[in-house]
Length: 474
Image (tube, rainbow, N blue to C red; front, side, top):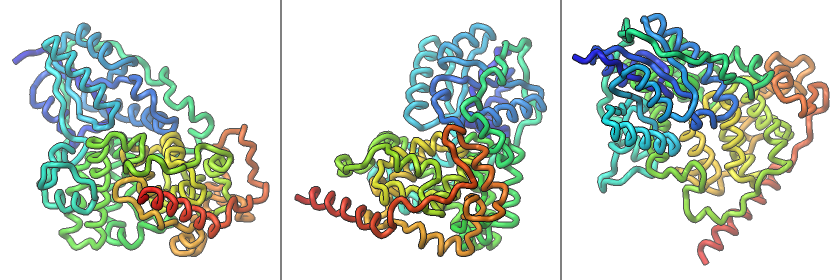
């Protein structure tokens, strides 16, 4: 057996357990050199996601050290970095876990072709999803465009059991040099918001597994009936950890299946939400234009408004609609936003304000620590009406009605809007500590009046959608 090492190129798979690429590399018996590359594709992600990625890298490096290994950090375009390390280490292969967004696919395809041309083994592995997008097909051999048939197609499919974390990784005789993570300044664009956001993060594989354990033990039974109430601690919060691969989807699936078999009432609905993530990546793989264009061709001519002063008030959580503003401020303080709230703020921006969904998509990409390019694109197009499985154009969420139904005691709104309380809670005040000083926001200032009457906004949206339908049918 060759003693030449293998390069293990980690990306959004920063864990040891439930890791097909790592498990297969360990079985080879070769020395292994774990590597992370801060390449242009990764440099391009939003401020909150990049900062949170830096936290994950630090945790993963410590976990690798505990099993006798290291995480080598290099910065630059992927192919030159890999070629340099191959020359430095004498490695005879590069392994990675497949990703399915357009930028990653283009990069990985080019890297694989170049390495194979040099007769270097370039091996990609599954592991980011439960099911590879190219393997789930309709009866006609096409991809799924609607979620429910997709769920029905995969719900009974076999999902292999997750592998345990290796107890040790074989090290090379000589480690290549590594850049210092601190020198990358991954949180530079977060400014003072990083200190506010940090306590709300659950970083790394151990924290992710703890989250899953607590959820399955204490919350999954009531998940379906409680998940839409943002003031309740009723969800798994695993989206943050899945984003960086700090936990594997197979582990979550099997824990959810076990809970379902034991009679947990909300378990199947939780599994459906995990598969919703799968569906988003399925669509991004097969229809990559979903990330930048209206998924439905007949929406291309819809007269969306571009960025504006109204959109800026929305970004700042100053619309005068408490449910909308609480959600936007939650994102700034914690790095995430409750899923029900995401639908409300998305509907308000795209329907009450008739603003292009891409304005919201870009802001979420900048501010979310659980940013997922597939889920973000599909979610925004779902609520706007231009995407797959979209909400009907006439469904315009009323923020006040949604608040009455899902935040009846105003606990969520008061938690994040300081102007609504004489003695505001810490989270409400932290928003003003996190936002840029140039915004000039003051928690003592009066809460703003609504930007638009809700009924008037709804009527305007319905008129625009009706005009679009009429034009399409002529």
